Length: 386
Image 1 (cartoon, rainbow, N blue to C red):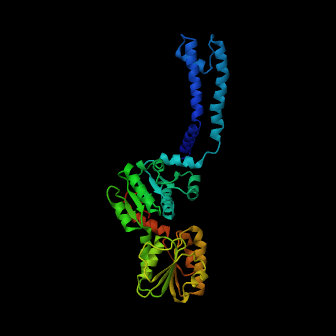
Image 2 (cartoon, rainbow, N blue to C red; image 1 turned 60 degrees about the vertical axis):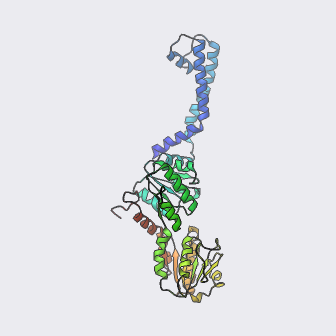
Image 3 (tube, rainbow, N blue to C red; image 1 turned 180 degrees about the vertical axis):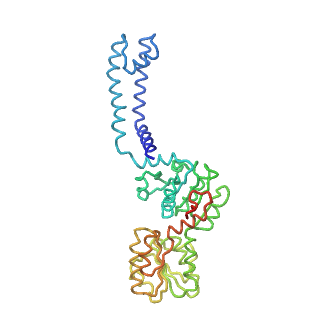
Protein backbone atom coordinates (compact mmCIF):
# COMPACT_ATOMS: atom_id res chain seq x y z
CA UNK A 1 0.00 0.00 0.00
CA UNK A 2 2.83 2.46 0.86
CA UNK A 3 4.52 2.01 -2.56
CA UNK A 4 1.21 2.54 -4.35
CA UNK A 5 0.53 5.63 -2.25
CA UNK A 6 3.96 7.00 -3.14
CA UNK A 7 3.37 6.44 -6.85
CA UNK A 8 -0.04 8.09 -6.62
CA UNK A 9 1.39 11.06 -4.74
CA UNK A 10 4.05 11.48 -7.45
CA UNK A 11 1.34 11.28 -10.10
CA UNK A 12 -0.67 13.97 -8.33
CA UNK A 13 2.30 16.30 -8.04
CA UNK A 14 3.25 15.77 -11.67
CA UNK A 15 -0.26 16.82 -12.63
CA UNK A 16 0.05 19.94 -10.48
CA UNK A 17 3.39 20.79 -12.14
CA UNK A 18 2.24 19.93 -15.65
CA UNK A 19 2.46 23.47 -17.03
CA UNK A 20 5.90 24.04 -15.53
CA UNK A 21 7.26 20.84 -17.04
CA UNK A 22 5.67 21.64 -20.41
CA UNK A 23 7.37 25.03 -20.37
CA UNK A 24 10.69 23.42 -19.42
CA UNK A 25 10.39 20.93 -22.28
CA UNK A 26 9.49 23.64 -24.81
CA UNK A 27 12.46 25.75 -23.70
CA UNK A 28 14.80 22.77 -24.05
CA UNK A 29 13.31 21.78 -27.40
CA UNK A 30 13.66 25.37 -28.67
CA UNK A 31 17.32 25.35 -27.67
CA UNK A 32 17.83 21.95 -29.30
CA UNK A 33 16.36 23.21 -32.61
CA UNK A 34 18.30 26.46 -32.36
CA UNK A 35 21.61 24.62 -32.04
CA UNK A 36 20.75 22.49 -35.10
CA UNK A 37 20.04 25.62 -37.14
CA UNK A 38 22.98 27.74 -35.96
CA UNK A 39 25.69 25.06 -35.92
CA UNK A 40 24.90 22.44 -38.58
CA UNK A 41 26.85 19.29 -39.36
CA UNK A 42 27.06 17.97 -35.81
CA UNK A 43 25.84 14.62 -34.56
CA UNK A 44 22.48 14.14 -32.86
CA UNK A 45 24.21 13.22 -29.61
CA UNK A 46 26.24 16.45 -29.70
CA UNK A 47 23.06 18.50 -30.08
CA UNK A 48 21.64 16.72 -27.03
CA UNK A 49 24.74 17.60 -25.00
CA UNK A 50 24.62 21.22 -26.20
CA UNK A 51 20.93 21.56 -25.26
CA UNK A 52 21.62 20.13 -21.80
CA UNK A 53 24.61 22.51 -21.41
CA UNK A 54 26.88 19.55 -20.76
CA UNK A 55 29.07 20.67 -23.68
CA UNK A 56 29.46 24.05 -25.38
CA UNK A 57 29.85 24.55 -29.14
CA UNK A 58 32.75 26.64 -30.37
CA UNK A 59 30.56 28.94 -32.48
CA UNK A 60 27.27 30.69 -31.62
CA UNK A 61 28.85 32.13 -28.49
CA UNK A 62 26.18 34.73 -27.62
CA UNK A 63 23.26 32.31 -27.83
CA UNK A 64 25.26 29.62 -26.05
CA UNK A 65 26.03 31.95 -23.15
CA UNK A 66 22.40 33.04 -22.86
CA UNK A 67 21.13 29.47 -23.01
CA UNK A 68 23.78 28.27 -20.54
CA UNK A 69 22.64 30.98 -18.11
CA UNK A 70 18.87 30.38 -18.30
CA UNK A 71 18.69 26.59 -18.63
CA UNK A 72 20.28 25.72 -15.26
CA UNK A 73 17.99 28.22 -13.51
CA UNK A 74 14.87 26.68 -15.02
CA UNK A 75 16.14 23.19 -14.31
CA UNK A 76 16.85 24.01 -10.69
CA UNK A 77 13.62 25.89 -10.04
CA UNK A 78 11.28 23.42 -11.73
CA UNK A 79 12.87 19.99 -11.46
CA UNK A 80 14.87 20.18 -8.26
CA UNK A 81 12.28 22.42 -6.65
CA UNK A 82 9.67 19.81 -7.48
CA UNK A 83 11.71 16.92 -6.11
CA UNK A 84 13.08 18.52 -2.97
CA UNK A 85 10.11 20.65 -2.06
CA UNK A 86 6.81 19.31 -3.30
CA UNK A 87 7.41 15.62 -2.72
CA UNK A 88 8.28 16.34 0.91
CA UNK A 89 5.10 18.24 1.72
CA UNK A 90 1.81 16.79 3.02
CA UNK A 91 -0.42 15.71 0.15
CA UNK A 92 -4.13 16.16 -0.06
CA UNK A 93 -5.42 12.90 1.44
CA UNK A 94 -8.88 13.24 -0.14
CA UNK A 95 -7.40 13.41 -3.65
CA UNK A 96 -4.93 10.63 -2.90
CA UNK A 97 -7.74 8.42 -1.60
CA UNK A 98 -9.74 9.09 -4.75
CA UNK A 99 -6.81 8.08 -6.96
CA UNK A 100 -6.40 4.92 -4.89
CA UNK A 101 -10.00 4.02 -5.69
CA UNK A 102 -9.41 4.61 -9.41
CA UNK A 103 -6.71 1.92 -9.47
CA UNK A 104 -8.90 -0.79 -7.91
CA UNK A 105 -9.82 -3.89 -9.90
CA UNK A 106 -12.09 -6.85 -9.09
CA UNK A 107 -13.16 -5.11 -5.90
CA UNK A 108 -16.26 -4.24 -3.88
CA UNK A 109 -17.82 -0.82 -4.37
CA UNK A 110 -19.86 0.46 -1.42
CA UNK A 111 -22.15 3.43 -2.01
CA UNK A 112 -23.25 5.30 1.08
CA UNK A 113 -21.62 5.09 4.49
CA UNK A 114 -23.82 3.83 7.30
CA UNK A 115 -23.75 1.09 9.92
CA UNK A 116 -24.14 -1.83 7.54
CA UNK A 117 -21.48 -0.27 5.28
CA UNK A 118 -19.17 -0.23 8.29
CA UNK A 119 -19.73 -3.96 8.77
CA UNK A 120 -18.96 -4.66 5.11
CA UNK A 121 -15.77 -2.62 5.32
CA UNK A 122 -14.69 -4.34 8.55
CA UNK A 123 -15.22 -7.72 6.92
CA UNK A 124 -13.22 -6.69 3.85
CA UNK A 125 -10.34 -5.41 5.97
CA UNK A 126 -10.28 -8.52 8.17
CA UNK A 127 -10.37 -10.82 5.14
CA UNK A 128 -8.06 -8.71 2.94
CA UNK A 129 -10.75 -8.10 0.31
CA UNK A 130 -10.34 -5.11 -2.01
CA UNK A 131 -12.95 -2.37 -1.64
CA UNK A 132 -13.67 1.30 -2.11
CA UNK A 133 -16.51 3.51 -0.92
CA UNK A 134 -18.36 6.51 -2.33
CA UNK A 135 -19.77 8.96 0.23
CA UNK A 136 -20.61 12.65 -0.16
CA UNK A 137 -20.20 13.48 3.54
CA UNK A 138 -16.49 13.88 4.20
CA UNK A 139 -16.89 13.74 7.99
CA UNK A 140 -18.25 10.19 7.84
CA UNK A 141 -15.22 8.80 6.01
CA UNK A 142 -12.36 10.90 7.38
CA UNK A 143 -11.04 7.99 9.44
CA UNK A 144 -10.96 5.69 6.41
CA UNK A 145 -9.13 8.34 4.38
CA UNK A 146 -6.57 8.95 7.13
CA UNK A 147 -5.88 5.20 7.29
CA UNK A 148 -5.12 5.14 3.56
CA UNK A 149 -8.21 3.31 2.29
CA UNK A 150 -9.73 4.16 -1.12
CA UNK A 151 -12.59 6.62 -0.76
CA UNK A 152 -14.36 8.79 -3.33
CA UNK A 153 -15.86 11.84 -1.66
CA UNK A 154 -18.73 13.19 -3.73
CA UNK A 155 -22.20 12.62 -5.12
CA UNK A 156 -22.46 8.92 -6.08
CA UNK A 157 -24.92 9.72 -8.87
CA UNK A 158 -22.26 11.64 -10.79
CA UNK A 159 -20.71 9.57 -13.55
CA UNK A 160 -17.24 10.93 -12.77
CA UNK A 161 -17.36 9.69 -9.18
CA UNK A 162 -18.58 6.27 -10.26
CA UNK A 163 -15.72 6.12 -12.75
CA UNK A 164 -13.22 6.99 -10.03
CA UNK A 165 -14.63 4.11 -7.97
CA UNK A 166 -13.88 1.90 -10.99
CA UNK A 167 -17.39 0.42 -11.08
CA UNK A 168 -16.70 -0.83 -14.60
CA UNK A 169 -14.23 -3.35 -13.15
CA UNK A 170 -16.02 -3.99 -9.85
CA UNK A 171 -16.59 -7.50 -8.59
CA UNK A 172 -19.83 -6.47 -6.86
CA UNK A 173 -21.58 -3.33 -5.67
CA UNK A 174 -23.49 -2.58 -2.46
CA UNK A 175 -25.77 0.46 -2.54
CA UNK A 176 -26.69 1.32 1.05
CA UNK A 177 -28.12 4.79 0.60
CA UNK A 178 -31.39 5.75 2.30
CA UNK A 179 -32.28 7.86 -0.73
CA UNK A 180 -34.35 5.92 -3.28
CA UNK A 181 -33.35 8.35 -6.04
CA UNK A 182 -29.66 7.70 -5.43
CA UNK A 183 -30.22 3.95 -5.32
CA UNK A 184 -32.05 3.85 -8.66
CA UNK A 185 -29.75 6.28 -10.53
CA UNK A 186 -26.60 4.53 -9.31
CA UNK A 187 -27.97 1.11 -10.24
CA UNK A 188 -28.84 2.25 -13.77
CA UNK A 189 -25.49 3.97 -14.35
CA UNK A 190 -23.47 1.07 -12.97
CA UNK A 191 -25.36 -1.46 -15.07
CA UNK A 192 -24.67 0.61 -18.20
CA UNK A 193 -20.91 0.10 -17.78
CA UNK A 194 -20.85 -3.24 -15.97
CA UNK A 195 -23.38 -5.79 -17.19
CA UNK A 196 -22.27 -8.71 -15.03
CA UNK A 197 -21.41 -7.65 -11.49
CA UNK A 198 -24.05 -8.29 -8.80
CA UNK A 199 -25.60 -5.06 -7.50
CA UNK A 200 -27.09 -5.35 -4.02
CA UNK A 201 -29.42 -2.44 -3.29
CA UNK A 202 -30.92 -1.48 0.03
CA UNK A 203 -34.55 -0.57 -0.75
CA UNK A 204 -37.55 -0.41 1.54
CA UNK A 205 -40.53 -0.04 -0.79
CA UNK A 206 -41.90 -3.15 -2.52
CA UNK A 207 -42.42 -1.39 -5.87
CA UNK A 208 -38.83 -0.09 -5.82
CA UNK A 209 -37.48 -3.58 -5.20
CA UNK A 210 -39.61 -4.98 -8.03
CA UNK A 211 -38.27 -2.31 -10.42
CA UNK A 212 -34.66 -3.04 -9.46
CA UNK A 213 -35.12 -6.75 -10.09
CA UNK A 214 -36.27 -6.25 -13.69
CA UNK A 215 -34.18 -6.37 -16.85
CA UNK A 216 -31.75 -4.89 -17.62
CA UNK A 217 -30.88 -3.85 -14.05
CA UNK A 218 -31.04 -7.35 -12.54
CA UNK A 219 -30.23 -5.90 -9.13
CA UNK A 220 -30.64 -7.81 -5.88
CA UNK A 221 -32.63 -5.61 -3.47
CA UNK A 222 -32.75 -6.12 0.28
CA UNK A 223 -34.34 -4.30 3.20
CA UNK A 224 -32.77 -4.11 6.65
CA UNK A 225 -36.06 -2.66 7.90
CA UNK A 226 -37.96 -5.78 6.87
CA UNK A 227 -35.41 -7.96 8.65
CA UNK A 228 -35.87 -5.91 11.81
CA UNK A 229 -39.66 -6.19 11.46
CA UNK A 230 -39.48 -9.97 11.78
CA UNK A 231 -38.53 -9.60 15.44
CA UNK A 232 -40.84 -6.65 16.03
CA UNK A 233 -43.88 -8.50 14.68
CA UNK A 234 -43.27 -11.18 17.30
CA UNK A 235 -43.02 -8.57 20.05
CA UNK A 236 -46.31 -6.85 19.15
CA UNK A 237 -48.27 -10.04 18.41
CA UNK A 238 -51.35 -10.46 20.66
CA UNK A 239 -50.44 -7.41 22.72
CA UNK A 240 -52.93 -4.92 24.14
CA UNK A 241 -52.78 -1.35 25.37
CA UNK A 242 -51.42 1.81 23.83
CA UNK A 243 -47.99 2.04 22.23
CA UNK A 244 -45.54 4.86 21.66
CA UNK A 245 -43.16 4.95 18.70
CA UNK A 246 -40.41 7.58 18.50
CA UNK A 247 -38.31 8.09 15.36
CA UNK A 248 -38.33 9.45 11.85
CA UNK A 249 -37.62 6.85 9.16
CA UNK A 250 -39.31 4.04 7.23
CA UNK A 251 -38.80 1.45 9.95
CA UNK A 252 -40.30 3.80 12.56
CA UNK A 253 -43.34 4.40 10.39
CA UNK A 254 -43.81 0.72 9.64
CA UNK A 255 -43.73 -0.17 13.35
CA UNK A 256 -46.37 2.45 14.13
CA UNK A 257 -48.54 1.36 11.23
CA UNK A 258 -48.34 -2.35 12.10
CA UNK A 259 -49.37 -1.69 15.70
CA UNK A 260 -52.29 0.46 14.54
CA UNK A 261 -53.65 -2.51 12.57
CA UNK A 262 -54.04 -4.60 15.71
CA UNK A 263 -57.48 -4.74 17.33
CA UNK A 264 -58.10 -2.53 20.35
CA UNK A 265 -54.74 -0.79 20.16
CA UNK A 266 -53.72 2.81 19.63
CA UNK A 267 -50.27 4.08 18.70
CA UNK A 268 -48.70 7.51 19.21
CA UNK A 269 -45.97 8.34 16.71
CA UNK A 270 -43.50 11.12 17.55
CA UNK A 271 -41.63 12.20 14.42
CA UNK A 272 -39.94 15.60 14.56
CA UNK A 273 -39.20 15.78 10.83
CA UNK A 274 -42.22 14.35 9.02
CA UNK A 275 -45.85 15.20 9.66
CA UNK A 276 -47.14 12.04 8.01
CA UNK A 277 -46.15 8.52 6.95
CA UNK A 278 -46.12 6.58 3.71
CA UNK A 279 -48.89 4.24 4.86
CA UNK A 280 -52.60 4.94 4.94
CA UNK A 281 -53.29 6.67 8.27
CA UNK A 282 -56.17 5.30 10.34
CA UNK A 283 -57.98 6.60 13.41
CA UNK A 284 -55.82 4.50 15.74
CA UNK A 285 -52.60 6.12 14.57
CA UNK A 286 -51.84 9.53 16.08
CA UNK A 287 -48.90 11.49 14.66
CA UNK A 288 -47.09 14.33 16.46
CA UNK A 289 -44.47 16.39 14.67
CA UNK A 290 -42.33 16.78 17.81
CA UNK A 291 -38.98 15.66 19.23
CA UNK A 292 -39.91 13.65 22.33
CA UNK A 293 -36.86 13.12 24.53
CA UNK A 294 -38.45 13.83 27.94
CA UNK A 295 -41.42 12.25 29.68
CA UNK A 296 -43.07 15.67 29.79
CA UNK A 297 -43.01 15.76 25.97
CA UNK A 298 -45.01 12.54 25.87
CA UNK A 299 -47.37 13.11 28.81
CA UNK A 300 -49.05 16.09 27.18
CA UNK A 301 -50.36 13.77 24.44
CA UNK A 302 -50.90 10.39 26.09
CA UNK A 303 -51.45 8.95 29.55
CA UNK A 304 -48.40 6.75 30.16
CA UNK A 305 -50.38 4.62 32.60
CA UNK A 306 -52.28 3.24 29.59
CA UNK A 307 -49.11 2.50 27.58
CA UNK A 308 -47.76 -1.06 27.41
CA UNK A 309 -44.97 -0.73 24.80
CA UNK A 310 -42.50 1.97 23.76
CA UNK A 311 -40.29 1.78 20.66
CA UNK A 312 -37.39 4.25 20.53
CA UNK A 313 -36.15 4.19 16.95
CA UNK A 314 -33.63 7.00 16.62
CA UNK A 315 -30.67 5.91 14.57
CA UNK A 316 -28.15 8.73 14.80
CA UNK A 317 -25.21 7.99 17.06
CA UNK A 318 -25.49 11.42 18.64
CA UNK A 319 -28.99 10.55 19.85
CA UNK A 320 -28.05 7.43 21.80
CA UNK A 321 -27.73 9.52 24.97
CA UNK A 322 -31.34 10.67 24.58
CA UNK A 323 -32.44 7.09 23.93
CA UNK A 324 -30.70 5.85 27.08
CA UNK A 325 -32.01 8.73 29.19
CA UNK A 326 -35.61 8.24 28.05
CA UNK A 327 -35.31 4.47 28.59
CA UNK A 328 -34.08 4.94 32.15
CA UNK A 329 -36.86 7.40 33.01
CA UNK A 330 -39.61 5.21 31.60
CA UNK A 331 -38.29 2.14 33.43
CA UNK A 332 -38.01 4.11 36.68
CA UNK A 333 -41.51 5.66 36.57
CA UNK A 334 -43.38 2.99 34.61
CA UNK A 335 -41.65 -0.37 35.22
CA UNK A 336 -44.45 -2.38 33.55
CA UNK A 337 -43.93 -0.79 30.13
CA UNK A 338 -41.96 -2.89 27.63
CA UNK A 339 -39.20 -0.82 26.05
CA UNK A 340 -37.51 -1.55 22.71
CA UNK A 341 -34.48 0.48 21.65
CA UNK A 342 -32.95 0.62 18.21
CA UNK A 343 -29.15 0.48 18.30
CA UNK A 344 -26.43 -0.39 15.81
CA UNK A 345 -23.38 -1.06 17.94
CA UNK A 346 -23.38 -4.35 19.82
CA UNK A 347 -21.10 -2.75 22.42
CA UNK A 348 -24.06 -0.69 23.62
CA UNK A 349 -26.42 -3.62 24.22
CA UNK A 350 -25.40 -4.05 27.87
CA UNK A 351 -26.18 -0.40 28.63
CA UNK A 352 -29.70 -0.74 27.25
CA UNK A 353 -30.43 -4.15 28.76
CA UNK A 354 -29.50 -2.80 32.17
CA UNK A 355 -32.97 -1.24 32.12
CA UNK A 356 -34.62 -4.52 30.97
CA UNK A 357 -35.11 -3.08 27.49
CA UNK A 358 -34.82 -5.09 24.30
CA UNK A 359 -32.61 -4.00 21.39
CA UNK A 360 -33.24 -4.41 17.69
CA UNK A 361 -31.84 -3.53 14.26
CA UNK A 362 -28.22 -4.03 15.24
CA UNK A 363 -25.77 -3.66 12.38
CA UNK A 364 -24.21 -7.04 13.17
CA UNK A 365 -27.53 -8.82 12.74
CA UNK A 366 -28.27 -6.91 9.54
CA UNK A 367 -24.87 -7.86 8.14
CA UNK A 368 -25.45 -11.54 8.94
CA UNK A 369 -28.78 -11.36 7.13
CA UNK A 370 -27.08 -9.71 4.15
CA UNK A 371 -24.56 -12.55 4.06
CA UNK A 372 -27.48 -14.91 3.49
CA UNK A 373 -28.59 -12.85 0.47
CA UNK A 374 -25.25 -12.66 -1.37
CA UNK A 375 -24.00 -15.39 -3.67
CA UNK A 376 -21.62 -18.07 -2.45
CA UNK A 377 -18.68 -16.47 -4.28
CA UNK A 378 -19.33 -13.01 -2.89
CA UNK A 379 -16.46 -11.23 -1.17
CA UNK A 380 -18.60 -10.96 2.00
CA UNK A 381 -19.97 -14.51 1.93
CA UNK A 382 -19.63 -16.20 5.34
CA UNK A 383 -16.25 -17.79 5.92
CA UNK A 384 -15.79 -21.33 7.19
CA UNK A 385 -15.04 -19.98 10.65
CA UNK A 386 -18.38 -18.14 10.66
